[in-house]
Length: 134
Image (cartoon, rainbow, N blue to C red):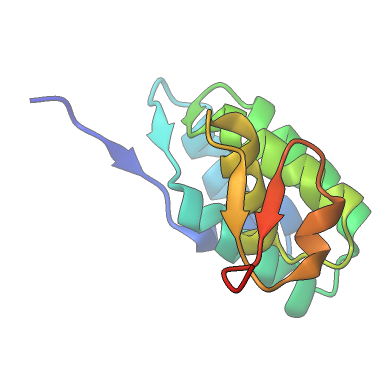
């Protein structure tokens, strides 16, 4: 049986912010081990929400931190989809990360259609928003 080493959001927050130096170092030590970790897509949404709401980081700072996290090869995640979502997050201030993720899902799949009332999706290249009433 393959063992999966799941990561909780709070470890990533400690690592990215170093707001608790002792915990940040413990996470850094963990990452220095020979283990490989898995971070689910939903965790990225929570990380971004915490960084923006609690820590009041701007989009550019969040972009840089998450981009470095996605580059860290000891963390397995949905890199292609999350990278596109992160680019959307950087480029479309009117969309929250979950919307950016949804747009990225459409952009990276064969179906490029998204049904939504949110006209902000109209700005996303490679995605066609359809209103269900039309």
